[in-house]
Image (cartoon, rainbow, N blue to C red; front, side, top):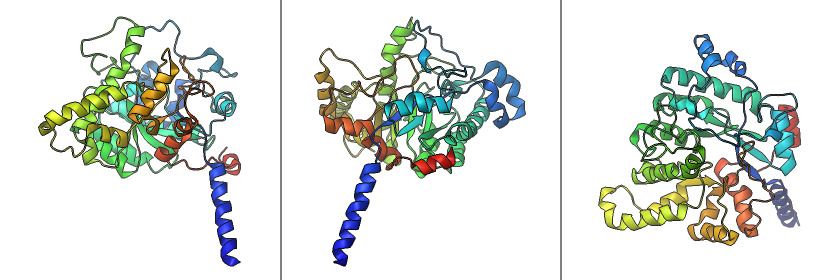
Length: 382
């Protein structure tokens, strides 16, 4: 009888765990400052005037005729969309039943491309402290990203070490625009620190062609925003190719790399091309022990938004199935940007098992978010 009771108790506990497992995680939520002066208490006084005058100081050369932010996401009390954590919870998280939102910042990633690394480092540290106080303290549904200045990997590693002590920081984030490809050993201090603390490293687009980064394409600058926006996945392909071929995942076997908002359907093309070439050119990469596609499936994670839209939606499902993308892609909305993806619509053509992986299970595994936030916990932190 005692053994039966024990088994029943274990079954009930397991059911409770399953009942509390997240069903929807948004891996790209853009939180913003209400105004620049919010950062001043965290920023050394020597940089105050520059911050108030210049901000990130790395502007985009492109004009978007539709803007960047959704007008309906503007908080009632004013400020930019995404600048009020309480309104974001109501307007976005609660509206769609989102269990966790991974915060990726708004307009801050370009700091890595500023010409002054000391200014960039100061802003990065101030921003991370502000994120903890202004956002992570509001609700356990918010999980943060440790912003780094990837142009100074040694300082970036120290910042990861400092901020990793806060368990609500669940990844490292940097711009996808860069001076050099991310597989090169210049960046290894970042990966070493991230791996040591079990944190994935994420990149987000929007900085290609800005500041000290190279042009957005190997042949220079597109003429207009639409051209630039269309070709962003090319930079993601270049970084993933570099990470694998340079042996980053052999040197850092526990590292995960998240390519946010870079598309998905380029994945099978790149994997198959890399595998084909590896069979003939493997002598140039003797450190690789497996096919490139195997490293990608184990170490690379992608997000859905902006998911490609084929005339026949089944073709997208087929591409996911062919490349194993359903095991590495995580759902994202890109809230509050203009090309926001509605979770009630975006994956409606996908099979149930595939949807469940993408909506939550893949992110649960990556970020360790196995249970939804308890109401009592939320009340205490709120």
